[in-house]
Amino acid sequence: MRFPLLSKVAALAAVMVVLLVALNSVDSLVHERQMRQREAEHGLAESLAGQQTLLGPVMRMQCDETWERAEGEGSSRKTVTERREHTVTAWPRTLNVQASALIEPRYRGLFKLNGYLAKHQVSAQWDPIAAPAPGSGQPGARIACQAPTIALALGDARGIRSAAVRVEGRELPVQPGSLLKAQPHGFHVRLPEQGSVGVPVQMQLTLELAGTRGLAWVPVGQDTQVQLASTWPHPSFGGRFLPVDRQVSGSGFQAQWKVSGLATTARQVADAGGAVCAWHEDGGRAATAAEGGRAGCVDAFGVSFIDPVNGYLLSERAVKYGLLFIVLTFVSVALVEVMRRLRVHPIQYLLVGCALTVFFLLLLSLGEHLPFGTAYAIAGVACTALLAFYGAHVLGGLRPGLAFGGGIALLYAALYALLQMEQTALVLGSMLMFAVLAAVMVATRRIDWYALAAQARGEAGVQATPPTQAATSATQA
Image 1 (cartoon, one colour):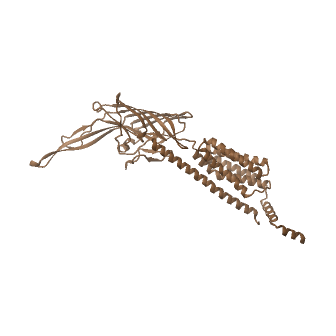
Image 2 (cartoon, helix red, strand yellow; image 1 turned 90 degrees about the vertical axis):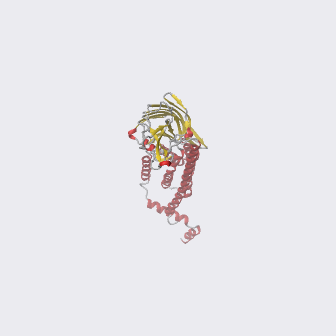
């Protein structure tokens, strides 16, 4: 072979292509498992209850305006009664919510979804509600109003475990349906016909509500205050308003929101038929009810109960470093090959790369049954031991093999640190690459690469000479 060094580089490039294809296959498998997890979460939410958003309470009163109008002349003259409906909506002057959320994990096969049971103590006060004045402009028009109702709309009414409403100290029967066109899921109570019009109204609500993923509220009061406590240590606050005060620890969190009616258009948008929209950790919003046409989404705020130790997410991030792992390992083997005048076949490089690739497959599969740290340790120890054993034979000795295994172990430790430090992963990865490049440059600074290539060509030429030709040359000499 005339150019052995170039041929080996080409062979190693082909090995890298094969390993890159294998890494892409593992990455595709990770994405497939993530999709199955989302499908399982969606199925659990459909069977239990989805993300809950509370809109209300709101007081509404249906009124009928009637008047009489004469039609015809003479003997055909008759009196016709006409009618028009009015809906009077009153939002709370003050709204105070005291809530606690107990996490109830749900499982479907290998997949887990964070469900919760939220207990609410809601207190709301309204200014006096009055019947509207006749608006038809007809003489003799009359207004007759039904008893007011107080309604609470929910993202998913299936999550209602219990609900009790007291108005002015009197418990009222709770009826299904919120009576709101844009958000019909929920419940309502009908106030007594006597003593509820023209006077202030105060309501206390006790509500137990189950849901999944997140819990949110719509600030419908002129002054809205929400306090939430939970034992979940990984809250993700979002929506249109962040808490004014929050305390997060390993044993849970406490958060408090204060929203002025001057800071939100929630009541106006809800009056116009706006939809309650689900908000996500990425900041996007998606309607959970009919969009209400022109109205858009009602302002809301709340918390998502996220699981930061997501094995699929961490596996996906780990696979992204797979190519870097393989390159660093190949560089280390090639450096030893050059420094110690060894010969490592491309097939041996391929086997080492396959062992590194299998690590990510082991990490994914073990992570579905074990905590991520345990799965990472088992996969890392197994692959390190295998590579140390194989390296002892490839590199010609137990000590080089142990040193090779130690280097692989350091790479796995560095990768684990990068996975845990999401915010500083880029800078740590850059520093690691710089350190490796500096080490390679320092170790090879005295190597004469032209002489090395010439030596490789000479050795290849000697090996390529047939025995009979060598004997003939010796005889002629």
